[in-house]
Length: 221
Length: 237
Ligand SMILES: Nc1ncnc2c1ncn2[C@@H]1O[C@H](COP(=O)(O)OP(=O)(O)O)[C@@H](O)[C@H]1O
Ligand SMILES: [Mg+2]
Image (cartoon, rainbow over all chains, first blue to last red; front, side):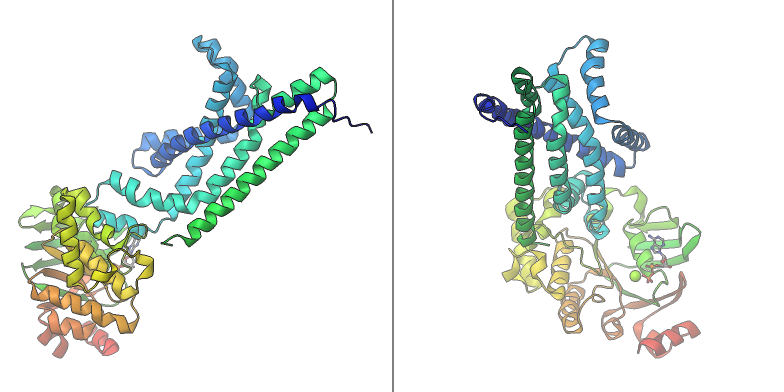
């Protein structure tokens, strides 16, 4: 076995910069996915059949096909159909946002259903509109319940984000591969990439625990 | 003020209300009693359309409640067995939320109202607490204040003391008695027979989805006409 990390040293900053790219990617995807997921979950519990049907079909499709396939379709097929070339980063974000919207919508739906139905009845009896009831009464309580699940989704997204390297986005993974190819040594940069992902995931897990503990201690429960 | 005619309600194949007809006059206090599962809650919930898809008619001052839309909930307040306070709001926010959202009451005015109401239910010092910090009796008093903040003309109570520890029942009943004195029209589902006897103008006895007796408390408690009411009273008193 011969490991040579000395050769890797000059490339370390290059790979580390990928952390920023990866985090940006994950954060933007998560925020978009969260909004998409909220809307979908409201469709799912709403009374309008077409929207319910749409949200269910959407979720089923995005959960029932490989993520990498979704990404390749969005990256290659959309430009082919529309002539709009959106670049690897955008295509990746779009894919992850659309995909996590499907997962997050299920999380939020479960969270909404877990809110005591007396809350809805109290709001209705007071004459509160459906919209304010959802936004001010139900969703805030649902979000508190589902924060751990959302944090999990965040972590999953961080790990899975490595597949954007396939379409050439310059994230941690892709940078490690490029360094590997130019040095003809893959093991060291991939090991570094692995370490980076692991630390990111541990950091997020820790942050999640802190948030959870804060919530448990917060004024209401 | 409220006229109920031939009210029927089913859940699937289970017919829970089997033709209820009665009238609730302005300023009257009505106690609804009867065995568990007899349809008391469902009857109450039909009055403010928490239950829909009914047969028969319910009218308030001559208008069918299904045509009243927003007006219905402004006129009819409700208090639940399990309080249903909003846990992420403070006591004050619980009370001012609906007036702000629904009646578009000015913030200062709804705050003033809320403080008045809190005083009247004896909880002025709890304004900024979260519901989780309150005892059951305090929660229910806040819930009553919250409903009153909408300035309703009728108040519905669904077993307001059934979820309370015995030592807290009194404080809630006291608040309700004050409300009776103020002349509020009230429909109260309750198992507190002494309370019903004391404050009610009429007792509605329900059994198996039917309104079996509709009497003054004096007559009902002393001399119930039906065997079912007799059997029920023997069990609870
Ligand atoms: N949402 C519902 N779905 C199905 N059945 C219900 C529902 N609400 C009440 N019921 C049934 O209706 C009957 C009367 O219930 P309820 O009005 O709560 O009685 P009470 O308040 O007198 O105890 C019961 O048999 C109950 O199981
Ligand atoms: Mg009941």
